[in-house]
Length: 170
Ligand SMILES: Cc1cc2nc3c(=O)[nH]c(=O)nc-3n(C[C@H](O)[C@H](O)[C@H](O)COP(=O)(O)O)c2cc1C
Image (cartoon, rainbow, N blue to C red; front, side, top):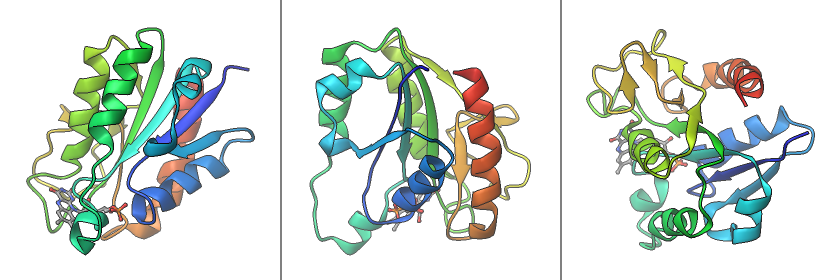
């Protein structure tokens, strides 16, 4: 079976909670926060799942201003990922940020596509109450949108369906 790695940031909040939900649906998924990923991890896996928030809890707490995303994106460049398939998930809050819901996923999507990898796992916008999202193309988000602030009760079901979907798309 092809190897899959789940990589996420930030730690200790909703993204990590949802990363664990996703990991629970796999038997042998490797899961790492992006600051712990090394080049071998990236080379060895054929399929990536990458999760982000849109300005998340670490900013809110203002405990640590370091942001590992730029270094991670550089690392993807160094390794070369044009033969990889990538599925994205993003956390957001559709009520407090209805015009920018899960925008963070759009940044990741663009970066991944620029590097020649294939993005799978687009997800229908039906069931969300946002107004605009940069991560939306027509009736779909570019990956799985999760909202632990407003719709936490829907996350498990969404994850279950999405994981079945990406397993077949990978
Ligand atoms: C300062 C701040 C800004 C945020 N901006 C957005 C935003 O633009 N769009 C959005 O969908 N969610 C936004 N959120 C909501 C977070 O993305 C959401 O709460 C997410 O679940 C946080 O994940 P974490 O707990 O892993 O950090 C923001 C949250 C905070 C604290």
